[in-house]
Length: 449
Image (cartoon, rainbow, N blue to C red):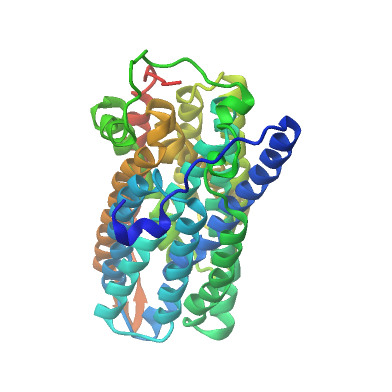
């Protein structure tokens, strides 16, 4: 860590607390607080990342930007988030999560606040890009906090709980923020989340904690007697930096990164363009379209928890079998959403519930959980960051391609815009099929204890 970043660096280890009951009491309290902070906190932070998805049609209707320009703006956050997540992932392995996470939340909130008072294309691209960088503090913070405070045999279930933050954030955005935009205009889509996340940043700072050893506690592996089996016996433990570099030599990590990238194409296609698709193609209002995507919240929470539980308990921490099941369900749900007969609200509702359930299970594993299985545990942040680069380059590429395809399919009929989403839909569904094939190839990937 360089001098300007010293404020964020992790503290020094202190003498261990001698009383075992006191140690257990502190562990239980801090672990509960940390899970709440990284799950609920990260969920609210999502609203500062997805606001653009909700305001697209109001902004287009107001003549501020067209679909292709919004695609350029939207891609900015994903490119910077990708590299921010990588850089911040490496930094997070050295950092104090209390300060690191809270700072990222606060700056992202301030950027969203500024977005509500500007309308220039270049300004939006720059601000939304900066927002992506500071949003990249969140996921590595959660991953590193879990690696520090939860042991190997708990990882799948805890990661599943934490992954519900994605669904929570999407639900808050597609329902709550959509409501704000409907009643107060597109500016409220940025200002509302900003106000909320300023408060969240202070709560995160209060409830997050640095490493156990900086609080006089033993490592979680010692406390739970859950050390696993070392990969190799070494005379000297490698440095964190050496372990971080070693992930680049793991072939399965590269395949996992590509699988996650193509999965994120579909994920953020639905998040970014789903409301516009439902408004233009299916005739839903903003509130109705937001509510339909908001179904992902409940289904996604169940999917994350179900994936973690099933892979830990039913398959003894083997992820590939559960990944295959969830992948099949996700592809089926996409076919129902895009190719089912029109005017079938019950079927469409079921399709979005199935999509939220299966997609968020895949986000749980491809977006980070499986990476922590096959990478050294002290490089958890770096592994998350590496996967994140590919994931969000996929999301950014999607944003540009989708914006281009949607704008190309737009025609004016009697002064009214009409959209043809067929090319974009084929692109979105095809990406999920590719992701499924890549994920299936990891059936025999080596797991590190």
